[in-house]
Length: 315
Image 1: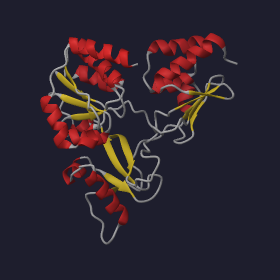
Image 2 (image 1 turned 120 degrees about the vertical axis):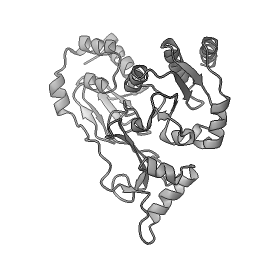
Image 3 (image 1 turned 135 degrees about the vertical axis):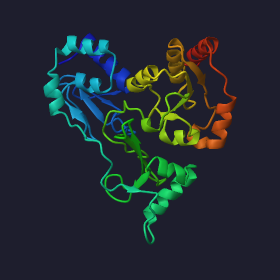
Image 4 (image 1 turned 60 degrees about the vertical axis):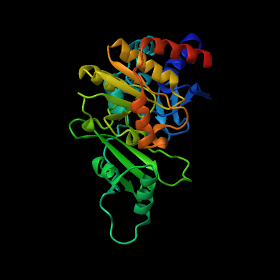
């Protein structure tokens, strides 16, 4: 049974990669699943056997190292796990895991094709998007659809495509207010560049948290699907020689936006770090968001130091 210093090391690595977990019986940890983003901690990791499994999306594997490889964690953490558990059979582990082939739900229907007759689900989806300030042009541009049945019943589906036009992710948002699980996203790695096929890398880009935030920003915007800047996007920004980045995360992500600002400044990229005071970008809408964008000044090293000090003081 894993115990002592080794157990603490593994828990710290999992907490860093997945967010702080909860201890369960049988030397198991519960975490939020990075593949389906369920609001409860449904991903269980056994520290003894290393087996991991999400009870919502059924993502699973036989090695903690294989789980962390999917999340592109620091190689030093993988080496620490190797020292504790030994070398895992990477080929066997990957073969044995559940790997979801990403495709749009079979029940997916495009919203820019209005069905004949009365269709309550279509109407619910269209009305929800209108309330969020999403236009007919947005619906066509991003191929937004909905599901009136199946696993994603009652949800707007927002697909994302890579630079080759291949599906690399989709967001499924409930349009029913009483639904507790607002998002039910696919069980795949979120280290993707959302809306990659829509981005002009020769122009300044804006980073936000969610896809509905990006619809308020509209111009050359990439949702992070959270607060973290993952490796594919970081690498591509550097590779493409992006000259300027605007960061517009939610007001509860000051530490994360400060970290991202630090990274870009160190790589010679101009940054404008905008921190909304109350509502997030998706709630503010296009007009208010663009007022903030137009009035934002470039963030310098002095601003960065002050932000770091304020964050330390708050915490």
